Image: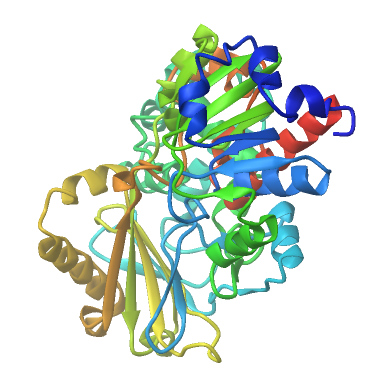
Length: 484
């Protein structure tokens, strides 16, 4: 950062405005509402933006981070429970090879604990859908059918370079084929198709008919295969963060300080040239040499740019929707399922709640039972229009079928639909629609002049996870620092 010219980039007057090819006089009106100058302006205080701002500041850059919400954390949001304990409404897990998140947790003074996973899981049988299997080993009725299907997905994923998925063998054909079409051609058993399709596409919170098999296989490959992606022990759900994931983001923001992190500042407009940019919220403007846009792609595309980014970039963001999921949290007086030898994990390819997990916290903080459920994509669309009480009844009825009559009596019930959050519009992540990967190729991540793109969707390692978001923020910081 030492090679930046402070006079050109952050010096007084209108040096950057003029240097960027902008008319300082014309921009004077919005600037009077609060004009600021920085080496780098970061947009979005989720984990990508916080990581970018932190590493840039540590490298000596002057940074201003603009966040639309009145909080930090993005798709990480933690709530406290009465009497102790916490629930994560958004991202909540971390596991092996997610090294950047582990490192940030440690750096911020946080700790992790093992996810509760002792006991049997529950899974609707693909051989007889009227019964649930208690899963205690790798072998159970129908497991050979499921293993064969998952094995085909893993094998295809191994042929893909996550940095260049459009270069995969037969990429154009695979990108034109939906995951649903691939399943129909490769998995004979109808119930197995539903199970494998629902489980695998849950990483994007997309229905199999919405996403190409190329994009699906890319996501699996970028997350180190299906075992790493979906397992607890040794997988992405292995650990949780003491007090939840958002407090780590809050600590990063605290260390950055209020001079860097500006809340309640939704960005509306970015005026840029190869020499720099001016970023406008409703209240302030920030003149900077570089901008790191850490927003879900569809929101990044909704900003006003002057001039417009290249056509491929504009078209790309129109083909990058967010996934759809409702996250349900049921809080019980105790984790009663453990006494039944169950670990709280379940899969049901017919139900509204596709899967569950025990989200209990260490006993010294709370002895309550916390069950997390996920209502994905197509099922979410079915129940969203229903009255909240009717939707809750459906959820509780399904929990009773899996975990017994005590499931009907939670002491607290919470649900969170990220699609209704103005500055997110969906979760866990965005996904490229069929054909977009091979059509737009590297435009997915290519910088545009002084504009860099970050966020979990942009990661080629652990996309859709907090770790992926951190990696992209840190990568943008390294790229900018390398330019001086």
